[in-house]
Length: 471
Image (cartoon, rainbow, N blue to C red):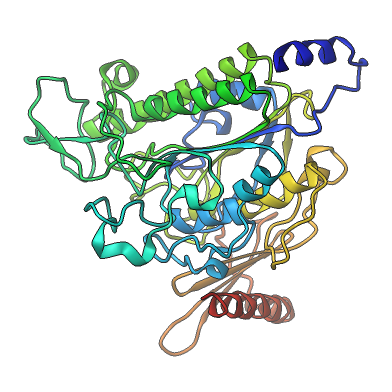
């Protein structure tokens, strides 16, 4: 049995040289619209996230980790392919779909004997050709049908897009004062009049999951992910689990238990804070499960958000000290909270200032497994030297593009170019001296602007060329 072998190997470990499995398990956890400043390990003293904070105290915290895009669908594509979303034909939310030509992390690991499972918000294509579902599902979106099972996942429990964060299939027929279908409501009781939200869960067979899905949505997702993990361990298979929560994307809904610490706050705030605490609770449940199964040391558990927080500065979500929010390529739109817990490789808490991005997941995991990367242009790079404390700076730049804005990070310098009717607006920031992006250095550093602009333009032309070559 895997557990007994694991225990024996732990008993044979040499002090100071922990055993590292040849095929460590991999878990990618992602929150939805969680701001950089919405967690305790980034200094939030209001929102209770004890389990994420414990991960930070037991792992590697990335102080400068980026989502590949300021909205959800593109970032998700980058996580699985190691490529900028523009190359994938997924330039924005609800745009395009994950194409069969792409090599996903799930497909690669499956060929290496991994069990692969997807749980939560997919948002990389529609999940049904027949039933009206979510944003694009059904006959209206047949061209974008692209479910997880067609991209390497053996097991799937997925929605196309958002659902309420509690009672994920239900929406109240009537609303209390100050509530709205968009923002959220206090959790419904079984007796409350309700109707279907309009987004469904689907499994790997393409069947609608019509069993009652009650309670906290993060718990609904985690229950199925934990079942998959346990079955994989009992079957002596390494596993790759992608767990993409809906929290705290609108509409935010929280149970009385999870609202209680925030009851003095308004409706939107108490539900926003409460659904984050509920999500954190499920991360704690997962970590305990990994320990009980005896595989915690041999499992890479990654956590991040898909972009910055929704709303304006008056909304509950916090981008921390950074400028901008969701949909922006300023730091607040793409700089997100991020952690890696992997006791076999990271024996003590550390923080790194190395710039990293969601496109780095694939090359990092393949480097860990000593596997070749796909024969495609990758935008990510391996973070294994950072994990092993052999390097603390990124070797290459990071490019971003969204709508009419292009951003280029090279070391601590950041170029932002915004298309306009007449001339582009050009901004240059030194993030080491001006992390809040308040002083535009473009006019005083024309040579730096020109150099970064040439590199950024060449990269962007490469992305566009790749996208055009897609069928």
